[in-house]
Length: 354
Image 1 (cartoon, one colour):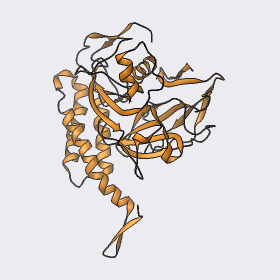
Image 2 (tube, one colour; image 1 turned 180 degrees about the horizontal axis):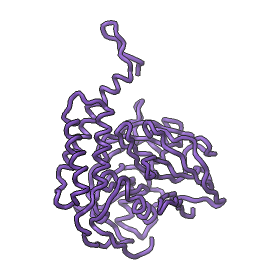
Image 3 (cartoon, rainbow, N blue to C red; image 1 turned 135 degrees about the vertical axis):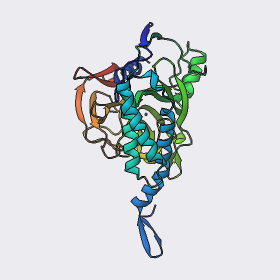
Image 4 (cartoon, rainbow, N blue to C red; image 1 turned 90 degrees about the horizontal axis):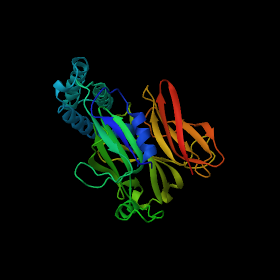
């Protein structure tokens, strides 16, 4: 990492799903039975799942409403505050409605985050310095352990997801040594920030005890890393897309975990071993890119050799699958650290040497 610093303004204009360039900079500088019978009536599993998801989604929307109620109107322009206040009141009504359906909850959540992302600060703020090539601490003074992830913006807040390995603690204690083999998985932490300078630890959204179904847990994984997060407007879920090696599910693949809030516990969604058009199972390095229209894509290289770069869209209905991918690059020597951003209508794919 090159020594130096970057100036970051602590307030200013924001837009829906903005912050992709900032995410790329940080990324490169530095995731039953078919039915139940009762009284001779069979209840479809889909209906049961919808009923089970309802209370969880309500809690996620309620927490979002509670958080956004802390925003003071005086800090934002009137033109941006009016639609935000309307979306906030509407979301509060849906959250309080015990008969609200999962699609209604998801729509309210999406509308609120979109309005929050469009808030415009009333003043330009001041610049603060981001210093590179140093160990970072969170706002409580504790070390930030977040490797191989990225920064993703939901609403008006940036969320930094990554992996905490045992080797990170050893390296911080003594950075003069190499710890290449100390990649035992500890957790996937998430930190939040409104200015990209100050980061607050929120939660470990996945840990060694996270269930993968069938008695398996994430602690049994041979590898967990290179992750990204998308928000699915249809389900109202945040989906963590993780490179993983899971012996219990066939080896290398892409693990999908999902949660109802960006900082809550994420549960098992799916494990995809093969992406159509990739020559290998699993992926090399990967990340998630969200386009201006809200569509989400996995940017990755093939696992063995990593010579080919691909883009594959996440399934629109729930973001729990990678659809057939298109190859966008080739380098015989291989590439890793894949990232993508969009600037002035042009897409840029960036990667590093092996």
